Picture (tube, rainbow, N blue to C red):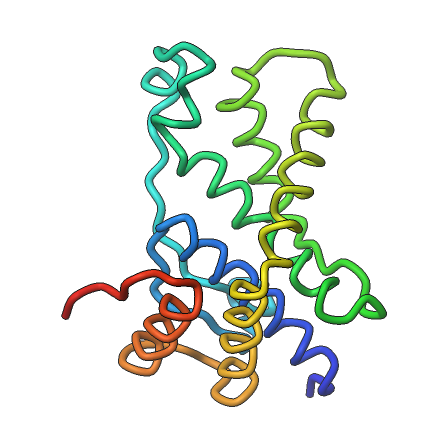
Length: 183
């Protein structure tokens, strides 16, 4: 049975993913802190995202890629947000980075942002920049409040799905100044 710290740590980790995804207009279908042994994960946020193809992304001049496809960096920031949100909430917990999150972010950075080439240090430097930007975003009072709101809902309900998820999502969107989707 998980202890209170591990439940709260998982809740803040998933809430970080959820709120940053909502900030970047990615579609989130719910979140859970219930361990899933079958899928070998402790918790998850259900995200739907659509990245451009590599050909679409690299057909643009590098200076216009972020404006045309903001979801690429938004997705990377969403992946980074879990561990950063956990650490910002309680520094004693340390960073709760998920290896799968880190691996996917590394692949997106290498394939999209760096175009599959560059020095070995480039993905590390790019990841550090994404993490810095994500930490700044998570420190904004509205984002911080939304993360706490989603984390508390996860602690209370363990799984946010269906109508409960929609209510939580809509409240989180309002907290960060976005309009919830029309029903």
